[in-house]
Image (cartoon, rainbow, N blue to C red; front, top):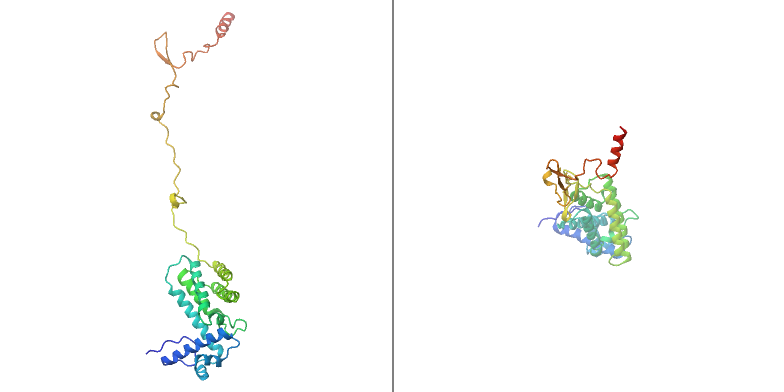
Length: 287
């Protein structure tokens, strides 16, 4: 039987499967005890008793209680990351991915022994904080999710924001479970909203679709290229509608017998004026 990999920092690397299983039992026992008694009240002897091993077996692999608890935190983080990445169901955007990841985190707080108690147990004293502040295991898990699957740019600013996110999530989520046994829903929702707001500052820029011209809303919500305004065609004579009622009347010229369109008096400056003839006679007499 092959020996499973032991990713934890241990004093002695196990060479037998039985020894690897013993390390897992020690970590399981540590999680149970700290969930019951709290981190400060837990001793190495408590862990050995709960694991049904000698205290010497605990010290064979871990120098002290803090080393055991750090290994539990590392294991919890690995389990969290594996659960998030194991779900292959497609999600629409990083916000949906964040919702899924935080839902897994909350569920592990409900179901995993010691997950909630140990994740922030040493926050005040700093005993369980990572030795490299920029390498928080949970922040690393979120970075993997955002950079690999949602095209976030891996920058120092993003890493700092992720440290803020996991710290706030740890404190506020533990508060939610203090307010309610299964987690105070409003506190959990507000926590997720704060994390989303912090990460939104690093959101990848949306790619604009390539178009040849300005887009306008077409039928059924589709975008179509803007149409050029229609230029009216010049009117032609064969398209002019003639109203027969409005057409000009025709008359017969008595001198020539020709048909003349329009008013028979048109063009005669004296037509229609009864005084025009008298005026003309007076002008002739004066001459």
